[in-house]
Length: 205
Image (cartoon, rainbow, N blue to C red):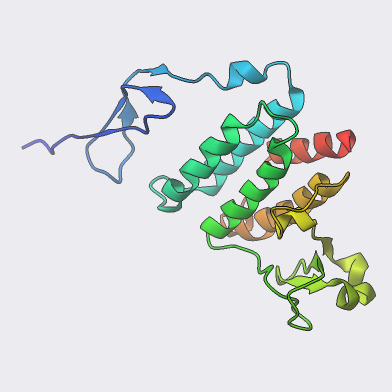
């Protein structure tokens, strides 16, 4: 007797009326052809930086998540929000860095930015250890500052201003841990799309 074919509705926010077909839930299936409700890429064709971000997002999701990964559902809403903001150049860069922080956290590789790894203080946090992923206070960071990643204030305070260089600093921070924790765990390097995004953002200042 043939195994039953299972069908499930796809997320409705981006597709109109698709359904998924597969023999079993944990096996590769297929989506029926459907029309997209939102063609996000076409809205970004004149914005090279936003296109670079879109490429980085898709490459990180494709390379960092396995099929059927439970973390995918928790990342869906945040990723959709980010994609919808890519037409807002004053908004998406900081949101993108926060999204990468959320990606690390959702996949079990989150950073500890609650208190200083040296003193235990929870104020004045300015750097992150590349080895432990823990925050360090400015006064304690001074002797080791050349070996630490800068911690932009907007990553620990949603109301903080974003200053020139903060986005690139945030991308260097998250990129290090995405490569050394997430992609190292699956024996892959950081996707070239992500590296291109950092170069573009750094060039823009």
